[in-house]
Image 1 (tube, rainbow, N blue to C red):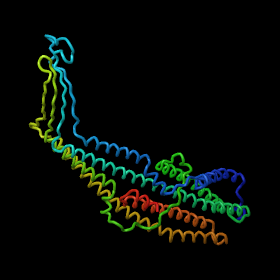
Image 2 (image 1 turned 90 degrees about the horizontal axis):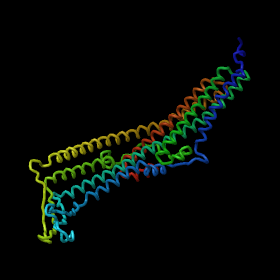
Image 3 (image 1 turned 60 degrees about the vertical axis):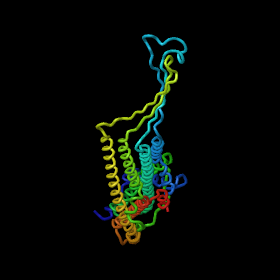
Image 4 (image 1 turned 90 degrees about the vertical axis):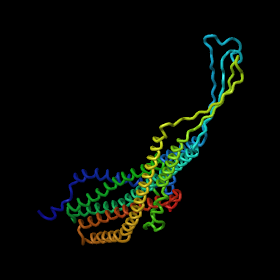
Length: 443
């Protein structure tokens, strides 16, 4: 068989079988491109996303818990309420109660009294202090939830930005691949290219288009994730991220990790719960000083006297029991709160150290891709294009150069996204004021 016979063009029926698949992939890739920022897209910046996350539904739920804890302060900071009582006694069922006005003449002992409990041992003060500390812990919990939502939001924002970047990169690569496939088919018809090489070029174009469809799915997932965190569920399909990429630099020196730990909201919440448990223990010890209930009543008993006065005093007698159970439980809860604080401190220290190391490593990786790997890969691909156009390079080597460039470009985008996430997490976690953290992160 001659070389010309080996280069016989692909039969028309085969082209017709392959055309629908290529067309579908082209439509899918075109749909992915329509999802990029355009006339109908709602472009959101990082500042806007973080501001929306700071007041989303999760933060609102935490704020409701803070309101309940603040109401507990008012419930704790008051003395026992006076007790008003009324009575009817000395009702003679054997001889009768007589006739006349039931309030003034009938023989019924009527009385009205007032009782009030005197709390001893400073119970009200320690009870109120415990409520205040719990409210402070709830306020720190709100800050922690807000920080967590911002962390998730900035990660979703950069995921969306990366998905948009992948589609842009794949669009350019797909255009070049389609052009190469068209050129290969023309050369095949002219008998200047082998059937196998033309098929390879066509397959490579379809692969890039398939990658575009996968990138579109990633884009949709990122859109819905960011929309849910920012309360834009109805605009999820048209949501796009403004390219607010941070600079490729490592975390600065600043304060030490040990100094930053105490500024974190989760550590502050744990510390406030320790103080609340200390106040609760004082309250349990205060129960050993029995409360005294004072009372007085005015009685009216026709036939005996219409002006009878009674004074009362009562208090519990704690013989054989000194509230050891309540005190023991409060002590155990205090020890538990202290252990929780120590655990939170250790976890916070480890996380800050990890975030600082991640920023440094990610910055080096992103800078290497941007400064060395990507330029060299582009140069190799361009040289391969030039050599192929001059007939000095086989199609297989050109496709390999393009695949390498495509992989490098996507890896560089992933490295940039990883750095942006690490920088955002470090800034949010190392800032004492969550509001200032949002401003710093958006710059």
